[in-house]
Length: 250
Image (cartoon, rainbow, N blue to C red):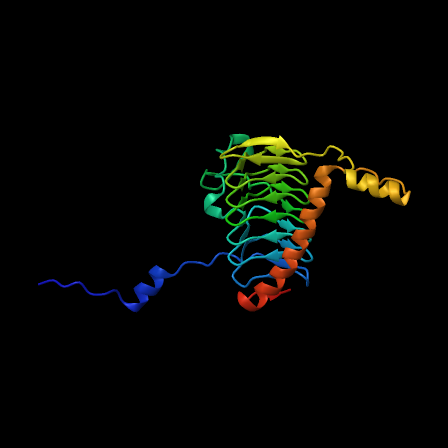
């Protein structure tokens, strides 16, 4: 009667062995807070700016080019910046003129062009959000949970991509615009009209015989308040991540 024997140790070790992915070089400001479980993979440099907080299990894939995260950003849990090799676009079929023949007559496709993924100052990237290679997110923008920013997309300053929305590859979102709804979503401009003085302010100015303050854009007042809250949130997160999640300050 034939019996099945377990594989030998040699066979088991050879079959289970797989090369580990390359660890991306990291340049982090000493004031940045990065959790220990953050993943950095790829061959290009990942730069983290001052005061930036990166939550546990966030992933940075720098296979197609460098990743730059400027000062004062928050990258939330399980957010993905870049793309792993398996999800990268496969190169288009090479033309005869753009291929390099080998000795066996086969052609080698041209290497993919290097592209930089940039997240500017004071940007928040929510949990499970994805920012693909080549995307450019300008200062003070907000990418909410489960949102997807496709390759080469440009997100304007002070704009907001709401939860579950997607910005198509090469697409752009203007400054101060909110993208909401599922998929590509709908867009509306944030209020930036001048806000008139309230009666209480006018009365106080008359009593004190002082000039009225110049009106401020309503949208700017709200945005300034949001950035102040963001600063406080970043400070609290920086203190919480280090002792609770085993994070480390770099």
